[in-house]
Image (cartoon, rainbow, N blue to C red; front, top):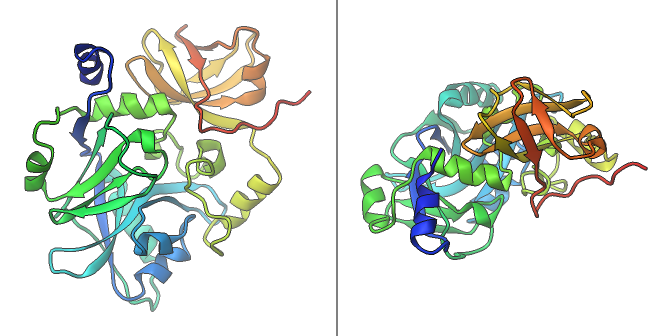
Length: 314
């Protein structure tokens, strides 16, 4: 697949050229009320107080057993009525499930949790550096913020739909698939496309290095397993970007080494890039470092600069 962002790079001599795209597979939830910060703080893996104080964060909501349910970005911004709101940018198709699960914990908390489509989610990437991870700017009834996981991922934004074209006038329009190719090359997961619901572990999917977990924030649902995995160094698998040679296998496809050892499974893919949950021991023992899917396609895992893998056993 030939992506517009690659064409623009070639057109400008290989130099980065900013591209922006709406992300219709991402949508917003508004959390209102005086207890909104304390309510979320006891539920998610990151420090929500940072979002209240003007820094965007990335976080996860887990099962009581510490398995992945939802990931989302959190930022603070007034709504159309001027009321301070905590906004969650989550998966569109699973937004109702997120609201339902969060609402079970409301009890007597003074919060309201509602879908809100007054803002649309999007991203701009391949810009010159515009700040550190999570740096947030309010603009035209919405916000822009440097991706709190990794600045190289670009700036995410939540804006009124009619403001998008005005703000990004002159910046080429890309597609969600163009952005997928970019984030996959960086090794960044995107919700349930890359993390299996009620099975995935945060630390297998980069949440520690990508600033999605705060070990000093206090208790939250699923904290025990996440902390134990961290302190006992129990990580045996990692979500890695893979260079695909051929047609990418479908998500969930088993991957093996040349010798036939189980080496993990495929997650999402676009064009020449994909993400795979790789068994580190099997991959490290593979003489050529190449993994194979059942359809015969070869995949070469890569370790991004931001990622810290456990030391290889001798």
